[in-house]
Amino acid sequence: MEVVQSHRKSSSNNVIVSILPLYRSAPPLEVRLEDFEFFAIDRLRVLKGISDGLCRGKKPEEMEKLVLDLWKANMRHPQAVEEVNKDIISHFVLRLVYCRTEELRKWFLSMETTLFRHRFRRGSSEAQRALMSEFKLPYKAVSNAEFESLKDKLGQVARSMGQTLAAADAIFYKVPFEEVPDLVAGRRVFIHKGHAYVAINQVVSLVVTQFRSYLSKALILTNRKWTSTIREQEKDRLTPIVEALCTSYLGPDYSQQQEFGEISIKDIDQVAKTSFPLCMRHLFEKVKEDHHLKHGGRMQLGLFLKGVGLKLDDALAFWKAEFAPKVSAERFDKEYAYNIRHNYGREGKRTDYTPYSCQKIISVTPGIGDHHGCPYRHFSEENLRAALVRMGVSSRAVEDVMDKVHNRHYQLACTLTFEAVHGSSCDAGINHPNQYFIDSQRVLQSKNGSVA
Image (cartoon, rainbow, N blue to C red):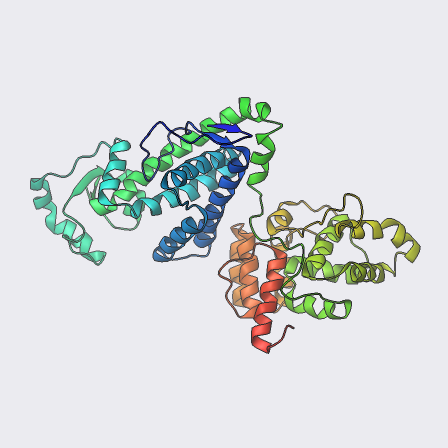
């Protein structure tokens, strides 16, 4: 797969590609640099949607629908061959992105395997058997004589899953039980003398095990190539894209508040109590308490306030008033006012800076005396519990939030906090502090008939 600056050549070799690629090798295509990034971002939306669904404990049938909806929304193309190309290209780009550390490899392997499992299940029986053939699985169907001798036992397993033996299909494969751990753990196969008897409609477990094993090895090899050659060779072109993709924010731009208009200084105390996420609420309380914030805190809170609709003049007045007990007006104008105007695009390069996303906030490392960052990641457990209680989160909900924190699902912890505070579900999950604010205002508006 060669990345080029200009147009991409379409494949004209009439190569037949499976509907569900196994990603054995990079495709012989030239890929435009913008497609290299855009395709990867679209697939990343699918994988992150799957991750959110799994972390929220969605049921198998809910995950089936979620994966289908995510694929339709992000990966579909009017031309079938282009959809296949996008599928393969995006996989290999993200393989490069996520090969670089053990943690990244583990996440990518898990999400891609889940995606593969659901897509395989939706395939026809013919397509499934074709994929089994491609993997060269060394399993033969159980003979009629052996099937008849075990028919009663196999029927018991089928009935325990709410099926009849005919519905489960009379074709079984005899495989070492350790190769289908998920079926064994779920008691969905009959085991006899070290072998599991796998029905044709359960072969997904066999194929997925092979796919996961292959992809795990491929990620290690890709990491070696990245470290030894690719990173240095592409340092001025692909490397910056690859290194940024795994922390890319994929949601809307919240640099300007549009839905609820402006907020003024007189409203800010009230909306901070009702609609600020914990990360911003903490910073807001600290600037009120200490009459100062270090640079990281000022940037995080300042850009958030800009995004919720605080205009430049009001922002200058807000910060100047809060800093007044410790900072003179002259010093404020000299040391702080420029940066505030700069964030609003009125100084320097005139860039209209965007508020920080959850991913950016989670990734920072606050120093001593800093108050920015993500409370779910950076607070001690004692301080986080106390902060949640002050927000009005019930004891039971606090435990649910802490469970997500312990498993490092910080955005899901924030989502559960939102749901506990507002008494309303947030199926999309929280991915941005300004999204939290907007969703909060919507809930309050629907309950009160006006924005709080």
